[in-house]
Amino acid sequence: MTTVCIYDSAARRWVRFHQLIDVIATSSVEKVASELRRVESAVADKNCFAAGFLSYEAAPAFDKALRVRDADSSFPLLWFGLFERIEEIELPLSASSQKLSWTPTISRDEFDSCIARIRHHIAEGDTYQVNFSFRLRSEFVGNPFEFFLQLAQAQPSHHGAFIETDEFAICSASPELFFSLDGYRLVSRPMKGTTRRGLTLKSDTENAEILRRSEKNWAENVMIVDMIRNDMGRVARVDTVRVPALFDVERYPTVWQMTSTVEARTDASISEIMNAMFPCASITGAPKANTMKIIAGLESTTRGIYTGAIGFIAPDRKAQFNVAIRTVHIDKAKGTAEYGVGGGIVWDSTSEGEYEECLTKARVLTAEWPQFELFETMLFTQRDGFFLLDEHLARLKDSAAYFDLPLDEPLLNRMLKTLQTDLRVFSNDQRVRMVLHSDGKPTFAIATIDAGAVSSPFRVRLAATPVDSQNPFIYHKTTFRKVYDDALASASDCDDVILWNERGDVTESTIANVVVEIDGKLYTPPIECGLLAGTLRERLLREGSIKERV
Image 1 (tube, rainbow, N blue to C red):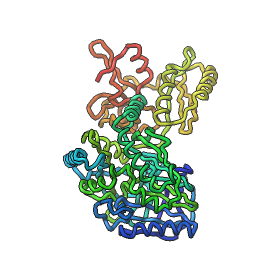
Image 2: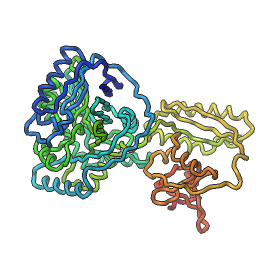
Image 3: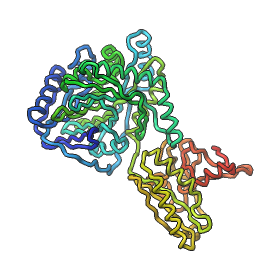
Image 4: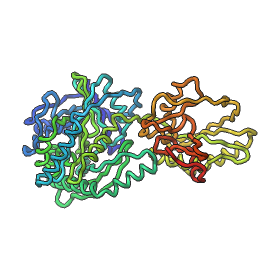
């Protein structure tokens, strides 16, 4: 059984490759170049499609000066399936959540020691930057495609891929384009510079701006762009290499990434392009050959698919390959999963900062990113209309921007105005639930408020387990309410539950903010504790009626 699905970023669609004709694969570095030429010839001769990958350790096939660790012969250096046709598909939603227990292949002390050795190499003039990485490993028992869907849902990407055979599965949520070829136009979009997403729109915007203004990341990005320009220049038509975009900052569910674009015109074949550019400079360092030698001496395991290239070759000089980052390799025989993670180390890098960046890049493995919608629940009274409408709309707008959801504000305002007129027919106060769907369309549900529905006395208790203050969903009002539903389910004898975080700080209840009177003054927990910024809470803070305090 062979299954291959790849996101075609040019066509903006997922495609599945059908009717396998043949598989061309090798674990011999001496055969990689000739087998790649064979793949390319088959596409031209049979008018078919090739989809597959090159492992990082295939690099010496294109340049013997590129040093790597001895490859594991059980995993291919090159693997391509030849297929008769492709079909556009919609990826189904992940129906399960496979939680794996990931263990690093090196200790923190070993990581710190490697960073110190890299700094020594930089001081000696051996290198300017080293892309140092390590592996995370876990036992794997489950469905590889379901795991891929989970990964793709946690980090939707423009260069994702799934390949499954009887021996292995590759699940890639890569955001980085190694290169695409469309006729004679060659494009590469190297990434260098990463920071984690904030938890609120304010902190998220601040994080993006810090990355955008980071001189360290500028320097690293420019260094890699220059290397890509040089590599591309080896196969480009004279005077056609250019950089149309520099230092773009792109948003993904768990990280912000700095990206640049390099393009050229070329008459070269795929094999010639790989010969000039593989592996991508963004995952080696500078200068490439000497730095790869340093990497081979520092990293304790082979990279395998990690930082290799996954993609397809189509008729009429069309091709696309990613840089295989954010990628999991599942070994079916061993029942294991492996995920590579790393970063570019320069002179002013710190082991603390680089280790934190690695953890940020690994968050995609554990991030829960379900399908959800935003909503607001508002009070409508005949006397005042919508209570705290401005605050509700501001919160909805902020959350839509955070999750990159479309919001047609003029349409929403028109619908609210019409609804307000319609609600005047009721004599009682109404609860209005406003839902913003993923397509940007708002809907409304109305219910009469039953004042007798609240029990007296109102029974509450502390939650049995803490909430994770790093969970972005508790900072936004969404239909994904697992944290709150689980807390309520554990206290069926109560009306509500008081939540607390991993540090022991009280945060909120499942339906309301918490305000406590201490020495005659009113206090509420800060947002940073991990809670939703309630609309009434925001107004009371603004008026000075309450203050924040842990």
